[in-house]
Image (cartoon, rainbow, N blue to C red; front, side, top):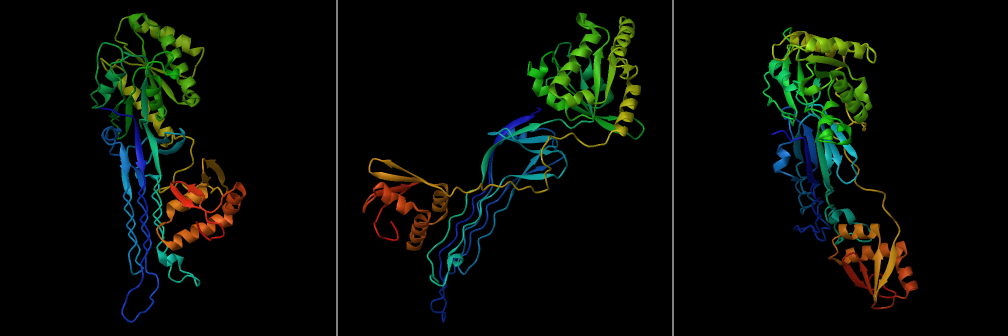
Amino acid sequence: MFVDKAKIFVKGGDGGDGLIAFRREKYVPEGGPGGGDGGNGGDVIFRVDEGLRTLMDFRYQRHFKAKRGEKGRNKSQHGANADHMIVRIPPGTVIMDDDTGEVVADMTRHGQQVIVAKGGRGGRGNIRFATPNNPAPELAENGGEGQERYITLELKVMADVGLVGFPSVGKSTLLSVVSSAKPKIGAYHFTTITPNLGVVDVGDHRNFVMADLPGLIEGAHEGIGLGHEFLRHIERTRIIIHVVDMAGSEGRDPFEDWTKINDELKQYNAALAERPQIVAANKMDMPESEENLAQFKEQIASVRPDLEIMPISSLTRQGVKELLYRAADLLDQIPDEPVVEEVAEVNERKVFKLDKVEDEGFTIVRENDTFVVHSVKIERMMKRMQLNSHDAILKLARTLRHMGVDAELRKRGAVDGTPVRIADFEFEFVEGSSYY
């Protein structure tokens, strides 16, 4: 089964907690702090593997969580960093943030990798908080939380040549006779509903990858039918072979078909109008085809006199080899560089900045008898600090005083015993004290 779109959840590992510990060795009185830092959490990294062709694996596993960093140890030993989680993806995968729709990375090269969820930083142990005034602090940090986000993966087939055209014009038949691919072939519209890839051996030590893309219909650029699902795969192709039913089956007009498909390509992505194109005038084994071809050439000459038209028959293989040679010649003239999204270049290990500019402000609201303080800085600090020690409470109290929270609470009418809540923590205000 060909799966070309998936939505998944990724989360970097949390950092390990810092440790509160003290040296307890013989002949070393008052040894001082010895609690080490926690290890960093693992990153979630997407890496391109050219052996993959679909996003099938993400149909069965949708959650990817890296491991947590190890907790700090005594004797000033740091906890180990967690291993990164490597997730393999096929070339041609576009990674997008599901919430914002922003393109995070466009992955096209084997081995290319990008960090999509950064692991949290390890918390600091009490050896980091020793000062001349407090040489033995009972103070440590919790590990930081790893980044988490929902990611949308969208696969755009990586092929040199893309076969486009209305349904039932013979694209699948052509692919089946020029490669070992076995696409489904049937005498009804939309036999092909997913792209099929085949390697074409031209016979003169040249080969290329050809994609049989599902048939387009009028209005595809607006998403009619499965328009967008089909059209995005054409963006990667280096040249387009436009297969036209020259027999005029089902009363169709070859020139009208060619015009409509090209309009759909242009309206979906204007760059596709500049892509090298060859018209494969198919079904030339049919009686009406010669007359239709002559008329088609006259009509094309008035709008695209430079367009190449090559008569073929996928059934009898008439003109097929000449078409392949011409496609190979065109590919030799085009740089072998995949078309990528307009995003910043992705380094081998691109790191996304997680910490936004910290808000130094605060607001205070009253809920019945309780004052509720809202502050990004204070709430982040409280989440990081291990608030189960006297030193940690003192540090929090100093921060509140320096930010002016004390003065504002007094101004609002706080007195001894007034409840104060910050995030999930509740304290009592004590007038004239250094802490709550």
